[in-house]
Image (tube, rainbow, N blue to C red; front, side, top):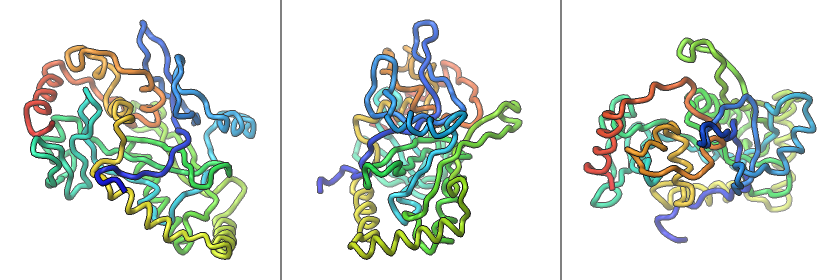
Length: 317
């Protein structure tokens, strides 16, 4: 195994909550109130739709707000990886990734372990725009048993809800999380921070028309069938755990700019004072999957330049 390269679940598609629109000659993100499944290929009009997107829409009379899924792993933390992340917005390179206790930070001397007091208590993180960032891999359909669709999110509501659900479902099923028939659901809520407008977050539940008891019974039956043919779920979890630990940062170089676009407002990324260039398309269908729950005030030019100077002239490479 090539050291220093995080080995992640094979991805065959993306789950987004938004689309790209043209405004004043710029490609900008627009939030949506439904899921969209795309391939990993971008065309002139944005990410190309996955065939499952149309198939799932035919099964519903309204918007696509629920997707039947299956987890790849029994360990909840392998399906959903969440951390505090800071990215260089010019290159998309990860600068610092932490768990609230310790972090791995890219410095001029290489990757170093640093304390991680969370973004609220970290001056370095506040300067660079450190945020919670999570990746959820799920299986959709039966065409590829080990292939997955990835949902990236910086939503507090989604991260907390998905983490809780995954651990709860694992507990009540006796550790058979990968065998449970589940579905991703898009839920709406209003808060004072969102000025009472609807914000959407991702939840996880048993599939419509089923009960938790039915889902657990199904999981036990599937687990028995898998063991009978030699399917070793524990070995699969162990292989995934080893792969994630093989690199300091999970996202590949090809994904870096898309990841940076997910973290920073489009106006900041496109600001010539920061980047001197316009990023490639793809922000809208990556960022709204999801953007932060409530709109953020755009920092002043002085603040953005100071933050950039801190990243380029300080410890970050």
